Image (cartoon, rainbow, N blue to C red):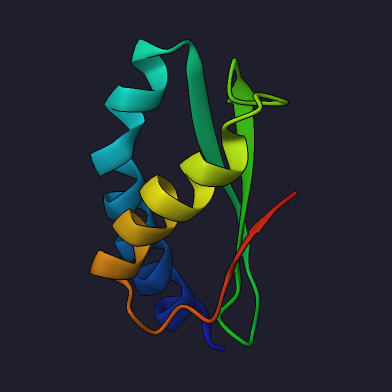
Length: 81
């Protein structure tokens, strides 16, 4: 994947993350984009109160993944690292 293409993809992903970020921060957490692989898997890291929270899997799937997929439907999968 070329640099310009990856930059555009990262912008789309970050716009999806910005949709859910206020909700995460309200509970003392956050999410960070770590990487986008060549096969379009998106790697994120939960931070703050979200890291290790018993509801983190639900937050990833129902919140973060849906928000990113709305902006970047080509995403293969969301991976928490």
